[in-house]
Length: 213
Image 1: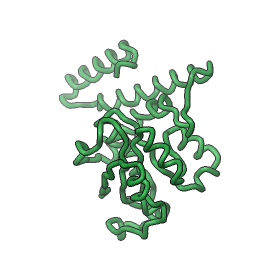
Image 2: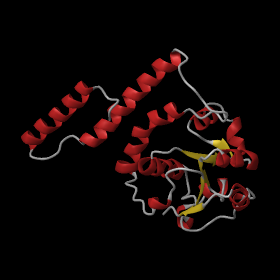
Image 3: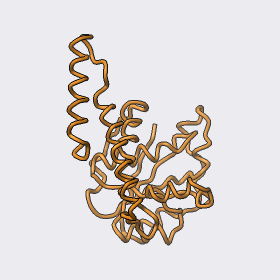
Image 4: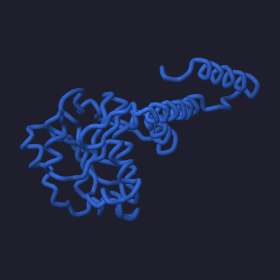
């Protein structure tokens, strides 16, 4: 957490150790508290720079600084709430394009954020998820998704992302996959017509399958 004020980090660590000495156990989850502090500090810094017009977005609306500010909060959910375990991250390339293809775990598409965080933690790269076209018409949500790297799932945009060396994440089940009841959590819904394999072949990039359980 090099971007956190040293004084805040030092004070947090000292408090956690003293409480541990008094109680004989960990009272403060120091790692989680550090994530909260990191999130607060990055958001404050982001707001300050944005107010001065100091930000950049790519042609799809992706703002890496905005996404980086959200990483500590997503990491907190990843480690403490869902307690995600990942296997096979060594297959994700450290450079160059790739197409990640995953099932949806159902209910809410939080799995996309968890996959993106796992890839970022392992490779320090941002994942560009493809989202349903109708998301682009939603107020606030469409802005948030684009700033976080989401791109409408159109073949032309997919090719442009892959040709520019990005890691693209797609869920072939589409919206159908998010509506699965719990009893169908291990079943795949019918795939859409996105032509993901065709896009990977045209861009000559590897396809990396993902299974979310």
